[in-house]
Every structure is written in C-alpha cells, then in structure tokens.
Image (cartoon, rainbow, N blue to C red; front, side, top):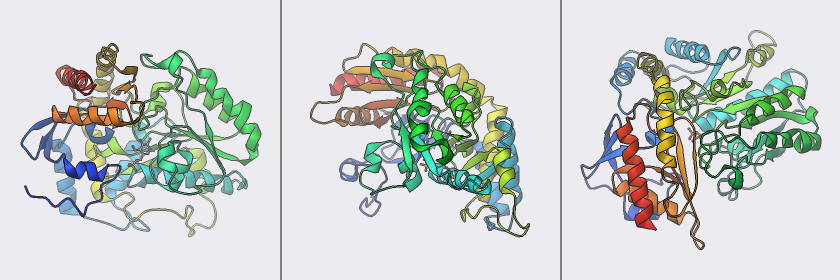
Length: 436
Ligand code: PLP
C-alpha cells in the first residue's frame, strides 16, 4: 500500500522518526493486529489501555452496525435518544453506591474537564464559589485539555503551554524508588505520603478555598505508579475532614483493569466523582464520562425548571453509536465475566514481569491488575532513548508494548492467555538485551 504520510500530524509521536520507518496496522482481531506487511503483532497494550475485551468483538460490531441502521445522530442538547439513557443507567448501576448520575463526553480529556466544571459549579451552587483551588499530583496524567495539563503533573506535557490554570497545587508523587522499586502490587510503605495534603497543602490554601483533590488511583500514563497501601483511604479521610471533593480519574482503571469494575471498588474508597473513557466502549467508538455523586447532582438541580443547571456539554455527548457500543461492551463484560477474568490474569502478569528483574538495565518493576511496567536505567546522555529503542525492537519482533520515557508497559486485553503474556515478556527480555 502506497501511503503519503506527510499530511497527518500524529499525536504524541516523534513524527519525523515515525515517517522514516512507519509502523502501520491494517486490521485487528482479538489479541492481534495485522501489519501492512502481513505480520501479526501481539497487542500487549490493548491499544492504549482501551480495547480491554480484545479487538473487533462481534457483539459490539453488530450493535454499532444496528444502531447506525436505526439512528445515526440526535442532538445532544434538549433532545434525547434511548441508548444514552440506557448506557447511563447501566454505568451508574455498575458504579459504587451513591454515584448514580452520568455526564457523557467524547474522551478522557473531556471527561476530566467536565469533572472540574461540575466541581466548580457544585461549590457555586452551595454559595461557596471561592472554592476554586484544584489539587493534583506530580506525575499525574489527566489528558491534554488545559485543566488536565494544569492539574496533571507531567513536566513535558506542561512546559510549552504557558501559564496554565491558576490556583492549582500538587501533592508529591507517591513513587519513592528506594522503597518501591520492585514492589509487587501495592507497596507496603508510603501511606503517610497522603498526610502532606493535610500538613502542607490545605493549610497553605485554606480549606475554604479548595474545590477538589483529583488523583488517578493507579497512575498509568506516567509509567505505572501503584499507590501505597492505605494511601487513598487517607486521602479520602482528609478530604472528608475538610469538606473537599475527591475525584478519581479512572480513564484507565475503569471497567475492569484492576480486576474490579472500578479502582474505587478495588481500594474500597468511594470518591465524589469518577471520570471514565477508554474501555467503556472497548474503544470502538470514543466515549468518556463523569460519574457524579447524588449529593453533587441534586445540589445542582436548582433554579427555575426551564433553566439549564449546568452550562456545559458537547455536540457528541452520549452519541448514539458510542452509547450503543457501551451497552454492547458491558453486555460482553457480563456474558464473558471479563472483570473476573482480569482478576485471574493479574497474578500471572505479576510473576511474569517480575521475572525480568535480573535483566541488565532493569531498575524497577511495578504491577497491579492487568498492568505491568518495567523501568530501565536511562542512558546518561539521552533519557528516553533506551525505552524508545526497546519499544521499536519489540514491535519489530511482533509485540506492541508502550514506552513512557524509559518505562515499558504491558496492559493487554483481559482475554489474554498465559501464552500471550509469556510472549510479551520473552520479547521484552530479548529486546532489552539486544538494545543494550
Ligand atoms: N485521564 C487518564 C488517567 C488517562 O490515562 C487518559 C489517557 O490515557 C486521559 C485522562 C485522557 O484520555 P483521552 O486520551 O481519551 O483524552
């Protein structure tokens, strides 16, 4: 196939390098892509942590086709269509008790932005409109909107984009290499890191000014950082003591990645809002959203009945194709017990990735649920180069991993079998050894 690669400016991609040696896939099924050269490539990342039921699953394909034959689009504002209401009801039923309302968006970045707006709108509705300070965390990834990069804590995603949102502060990252480098699952050490919120950040801003604390329960995009045991529980308790909202960004962890439907279930911590996207539709059609606590939603249902309660929304909020895909995806999760399958896969992944401990240049290995990460020592003169070279070598050897700097990540679909995990890890071992 002759492709002109020039016009498409690829996101989060070194465009010049890619276009000098492109990696093009043309089809996919279950655990595999097919490349334009006919090679099979094992998808060790379920796309971008989103094709959690495996590629091109027939029930989802059929549901989207049927929806397309029925209703292609309906305005998202002032008009409704059945599958949006049905999908919202279904998602709320899966969420922790008390989060019974769903605001739909088209992506994780938008979901994050909407959650911030709902938080600010809520405080204003409670006549506490001065509560506008947002507390995020170093290394956090919350997508690419200005809210997301401001509350997020990845320096490279922020440095080029100016002054960002005012009134944002950050907790420190929970990752402490000395303590956590080869921790299996949740590290034992570090719950007290949450105390920084109460000891330093809340007094600095005063609780009366703080709208919300927002965290990914497990940090994904920055390279997989698992919270120490008890850390999230402490954050919840501190937020409760000071009347501050706690928001979980579950764009990666939502819909089964940790072997429970939400990370909130896994950790036994109920936040006031949960953002989701990715796996909710198995990535077949983009969809994101915010699960909102009843107390927040109900507070905002005020003013004259003809007035809009939240001046916010997207043309494609609750798009018919996306919500049809969500319903079919959640049916598939139920019918194939995919979340339980993810839970069963987790210990196998843990053992497999920790088996790489003795490979040269491996400095840290982390895992939880269906996620495994292997961190390599950076080359002194070129941080990120070794990770990128290993990623390319894995792809050339027929396995898609993800490189974040010098951290290589696997987060396969929940239908992965042991032989798939073995192949991912064996390929990674060979690639690290070859790249040197
Ligand atoms: N939030 C988290 C925790 C994510 O991991 C991501 C994407 O990886 C996003 C938000 C952004 O989602 P999207 O790329 O759909 O905008």
